[in-house]
Image 1 (cartoon, rainbow, N blue to C red):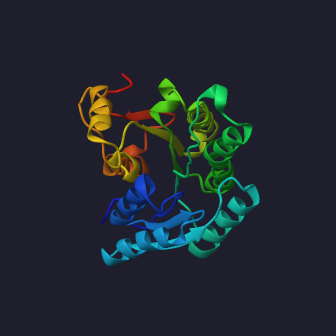
Image 2 (cartoon, one colour):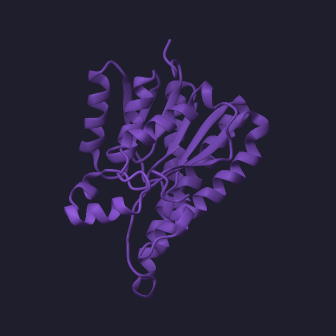
Length: 248
């Protein structure tokens, strides 16, 4: 029997990058996975196709996580269709980088709305169901930027630091109902964006990572699957940094 056989999972922002890798890993481990997207339906459809080609089960769902009512409806629809929702992975996020002195208010607001408020929206929507069911796994994707800060990302760092605070609070509030809530804080992870960097830029990034190289999306996905499974049952309120030692 696979690790997550019989479980239903929702991964937000799962059309590409880390979210896509997590969705594929959870499906490979036996879960029925809902692949959420906000705008790029084609990318999400491709993730579902790849999961199905490998024998997994996945379904697509559109929702802007910053919209409270839309999130509530999405969660209700999943529970109505599947009868349950066991695993929530909050991965949806955006960046609008700029130095603090140059940042426009709307650049700050949109990042907070998606990354921080979006995480709150989904956690609150599933919490009532998970508390009644007395079980559940919530995994929030934060960032080392939320742990260390990062020049040019005051909005992003604030949102991801906020995710850490919400993770710890939610873990305390729901622990008595057998619900675990944890955060993963990725460091530099290979993505389409980082692959477009010059070799010199990559070398500078690698120089600040003790292990000397960037991680891969599968490194985050493997930890998410661990936390979602039985092995992670006694881990809650933690921030697990997967960054090659950068933030130690």
